Amino acid sequence: MGARRAFFRAAVVGLAIAFSPFQAASAQVEAPSGVAGVGAPSEIPTEDTLETPYGLAMGSGARAGATGTSALAYNTSNMAGSRAYHIEAFSQLIPGSKSNGGTYWTIGSSVADSTTAQKIAMGTSFRGVFSGDGRQYSGWDWRSGVAVQAIPQLGSGSGFRWARLSSEWSNGVRLGPSFDGITRDASMTITPIPWLKLAGLGYNLIKTYSVLAPQMAGGSVSLSPIDAFTMGGDVLVDFTTFQKNEIIAGGGISYVAGEMVPIRLGYRRDQGRNLNQITAGIGFTKGKIAADVGLRQDIAGRKETYLVLMFRYVVE
Image 1 (cartoon, rainbow, N blue to C red):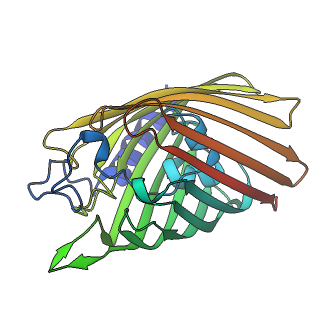
Image 2: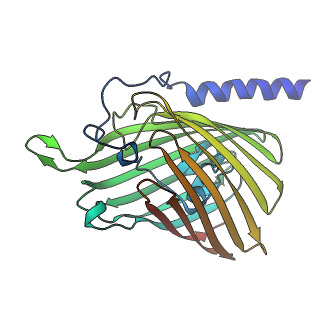
Image 3: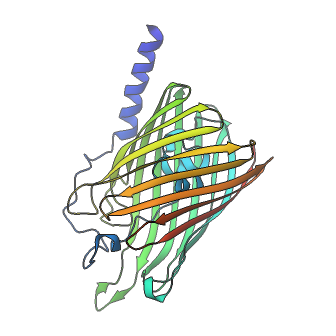
């Protein structure tokens, strides 16, 4: 009974810490930057944020099981759940032409460390964002996160983001979306049994009024019945991009072949933009070196292809 009471108290405290600044996630009244004048739902600009090959390839099913730099991107509360010190270089790429807005790409690096301090992990990432003429914005994006693993069954985390993604102006009107400011995320992960993780998530809790950083909240589940196999599913609600709340949901599976080759498949449904997306990824790990690639492909609508390439060095 004592252990159960301690776990319950820790869970309550973790929730209070993680979500204390959450502002009821109410729908914003102002139109998000970059939405006005857009025609078909699929043409509404997509959230611009840090992605990893693992997260992209798992569709919408990565968050509860994310570790290392993927935890920094999707679920900071997981950073302290496993001991690792990773340094990564990455690039995000959406190939394009003049007819569809040109090529979008980013280049950056991330660090996540859960080995230096007991029960505490920290991470940081910086990326430069470059867009084709049709996308009308570029800039930079910096984020940091901290996680506390109070007990093995409970982790809480908080992320801070500062970005300057600026669009061009014409006759006093922005030609594209923009996000210039700060915001934060918060999350909590519960591990009731070793092979099951449940996560509560909140993103952009400081309102940005930008379609590039929408206010969202939701949950995620991850199951790992064996070490080499993981399956997961996420459900998120976008409160601020559209006239009403819309859901982003899906799932994915990951299998590590021969302890060296991760293979991933997933699916993602973006209700607000009416997009169905299939995802896939593969990687290779040898000792302290790893390489990974993730892909997301629109099945219909805009038919956009999204790639993330990553190289990792494992310090510890």
